[in-house]
Each structure stands twice: as structure tokens, then as C-alpha cells.
Amino acid sequence: MRVTGTTATSRRWPIALVVGFSIHGLAVARALARQGVTVHCLSDSQTPDLPTTRTRYATVHFRRGLNSGPLASFLSEIADEIGSTDKIVLFPTSDRIAKAVATAWDALDERYALSWSHCRNLVLELQRKDYLAMYCDRAGVRHPRSRSLSHPEDCQSVAESLQFPLVVKPAQPLSSFKAIRLDDLAGLRWCVSEYSYDLPFVVQEWIDGPEPSLYSCTTYLDHGSPLYLFISRKIAAQPPGLGQGTVFETHADRQTEEIAARFLRQLDLSGPVAVEFKRDAAGRFWVIEPNVGRTEYCVDLAVQSGFNLPYIEYLQVAGRSAEITLPARSRGCVWFDTDKDPACFLANIGVLRDQSGRIRRPVFPYFGHGDWRPLAGSIWNQVSRVPRGVAKRIWRMMSRIGS
Image (cartoon, rainbow, N blue to C red; front, side):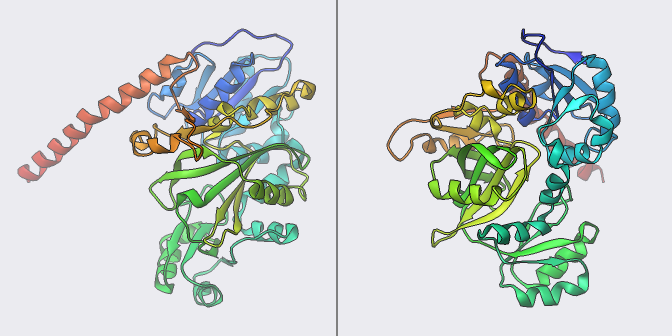
């Protein structure tokens, strides 16, 4: 365990544990600690010196193989190290961790509190891509035409029932790929052969559109009732097309809110939820997937816009919902993942000015909050990559000469 600092807090409040400490976990820790919550974080000791672990806002614990090891055992050990007599409020930060928590909850219930503990089975079901069409049909919302593919011999029938181009996704989360776009039957057969160990797949028709056609409605649900609806839009991704978003902006869109609320009200679901949409050329919104059991990777966009989702979740779990304050409206912000793509800010600096000409606030993974050590660590890592890259190229060149 490394103690990197905590803020003062009332001992009457339960402790929070953030599981997974990427820039996502750092944003959650800061959002809680800056409201006076004592925060602990669990990080993977196999990860090379993450800048996030240098934060002054949390006590950081390490366990080797966090994403593949016995999480329930790790959490029991951490609870002993923390030594709290009250239940610790748990904040998973990935689908893998949320799934592990859900499946091991009976062993964790005595030591931990979780916003969605009552609906664990529903969270696990919504993580699966092959259940989404059923819930969209029930709610009367659009979802791309889809088929399940479980065996290689199903490729022909699936291709004949859908229109190319198609996108293929593993039905189960945490597989070796997220999504692959295919243009013909040969590509589909190749995908099934290449990733046969990830079967079954969900194959669905591709909804065309660039990154800014992707929207997300983020909320905190209390048994299906949203406390607040926050809309964001993806501006850039790395790699472009089907990659992870690197630039997101706040965006007001009433239609997105209405469709998300319609989809969610059928579910006895609690906790943080984000429903992702794609808008086609005709202006129609299609539900792509819900993210459940955790906040989004770019949660700091919501936090800095005035919707402190982690703290709202904490107050709900701690039985202090009367203290929740919701913003009258979101503050205009743009989030840049300069950790994954250091050039994304300069490449997209123009989006800081909204359609009305107002300048929106830029949000970065490490900068600000009076927390300079993660920023310094990030800068050092970026700078040190240059000589490491040069050294690797020289070594490869010398090896070729020597051979």
C-alpha cells in the first residue's frame, strides 16, 4: 500500500473505494475527495508507474493482476487494511470489474455498499449485447437490426438476413475486441475464424455517421427514475471510426433525453447509467448500447459541467440523498483525453467555441484541482517515450546489420 494523501473529512461519513485507477478512477476519486469524502483506490501493481497513483486525493492500494485475479479476495484484504467499521462504498470503473463485483457480491456484502446491489442480475444482463434488442423493442426505441451468431456455419444465414456493411460485437463484455466493421460475407467468415474463442457474436447493421453523430445520455438512476439527464457528444476517437473516444463535448438535445428516459423507465435499475446513441443522416436516433454498473470513462466531463455523478451516487448509497444538489443546467465543457492521444487538444481546439460563439471550458485528465503530481508524472512519461522510441529503432537497425 502506498499512502499518497487524503483530504480531511467527517468521520461520520463512510469511506469510498475506487476500483481501477486509470484517468477514469482519478476523476472519480477527485470528484469525491473534493467534497470531503475519504477516498481509497485500488490499482494494478503490474501497471508501470501510473501518474494517477500520485494524486493527493486518495490512499492508493496495489494488487497484482487486478483485472484478472481474485477480485473478491483482493477487496476483502483491502477492507481489512482500511479497517472501517462501516460499510465501504464501492466504485467500479470498468465492465470487467463491475462483472466481477456482481458475481462475487455475496462474499462482499458484509464489508461493502454498492448502488446497484439490488439489481446485480439486471446489470449483468444489460452488459450482454445480445439482450439489448429485446429491451429496445419493449421500450419502443430504435435499435440496429441484429442477429446472434454462435457457430461458424451461421455466417451465411446471418449475412442473408442483414444488409452490409455490418458491425460485429462479442455478446459478452471483456472480450479480445470491441467491434469490427465488415463489408462482405468473406469478412464475416474471417472474423468468426479469427476470433472463434469470443463467440457468440452480435451482428448488426451499420448506422453510418462520423464521430459527432454519437451521443450519450448519462444519468443516475434510482429504481429506474433518473435524477438528472446529462447529454454529451463524441467529437473524436482513436482510432477513428470504432475507437475509444478522445474528445467529448457537452450538448443539449431534448430528443436524446426523451429516448433515454423511455428506454430506462422499464428497468428496475439503480446506479450510474449511460445510454449511447447514433444519429443517422435522416436525424433518427438509434440506441447502440447502455453502460451500466459504472460511470463512463469521460465522467470528468459531467463532473466539471456541474453534474457530480460520483458524489451523487455516494450520497445515495450513504443514505444522505437529502443533501443531493442538482445543477439547473450543465456548464459548457469539452473533455480531451490527452493521456491516450496527446495531440487531440491541438487537433480539435476549435470545438472549444460553441455554436453561439461562447468559449467552453477545456477539461483534461491530469490538469487542475490543485493536484500537480499526476500532471508531472504524465509529462515525464510522455517526454521519456521519445528516447525510448529512438533507442528501440536503433536496436532494431543494429540487429538487422548484425544478421
